[in-house]
Length: 112
Length: 118
Image 1 (cartoon, rainbow over the protein chains, first blue to last red):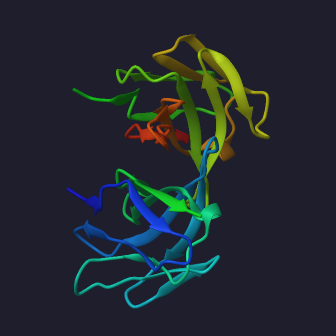
Image 2: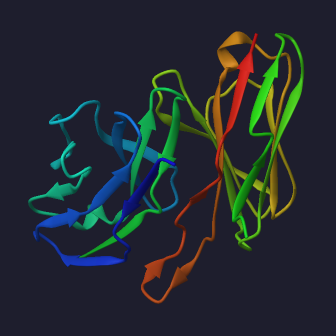
C-alpha cells in the first residue's frame, strides 16, 4: 500500500547549519506531498506542499522538491534557527481516496 | 500491536443524525487529539486532552463534543450532522515531558475515520 518513510531522529544541529530531512514515498499513482511541522505543545501545521512532479514547495526558508524519479520529497533549509526546533512530518495524499498518510516524524533540535 | 486505533474506519450517515467516533491508544500517553482533514485536504486541530482535561479547543461548532473517559480513550461525538461535516477525522496521542534534553511529545496518528454525511 501507500506509505511514507522519513529519516529517524532526533536530528541535532547548531544554529545556522544546513538542514536536510529525507523523505521517500511509495504510492501507486501520483500523490500530493506535504511537510507538516509540530512545535512543542502545539498541533500539526502545514509547512509546505507540492502537488505534482518537479514542483517545489517553500515556506519560512524551508524548501522541498517533488522528485518523481526518486520518489522523494526531502526537506531542506539553508540556515536553521533555534526556533525551528520541532517535529517534522512528511505526508502524502492520494487523490483517489483523499486521505493523508503520514511518516513517523523527525524531531529536530537546534542548539544555540 | 496497533498504537492508535479509531473506529469506525468509514461512517456514512444522514444529515441531522448524531454519531460518535472512538479513539484508543495503547502507548500509555497522557495527551490525545482530534484533527479534521478539511476540504483543502489539510489537517486542522480540533481538540486536545491531557490527562482527561481539555487543553486545546479550536473554533469548532458546539455540535462537536469530545469525551475522554480515561487517558487511553478520546471519543468524538457529533450532534445534528451537516453536509459540511463530511471529512476525514484523525485521532492522535503523545506523551508530554522530556527524555534527557528532548521533549517527548511527538504525536502518533491513528488511521483516520472517513465521515460522509448524505
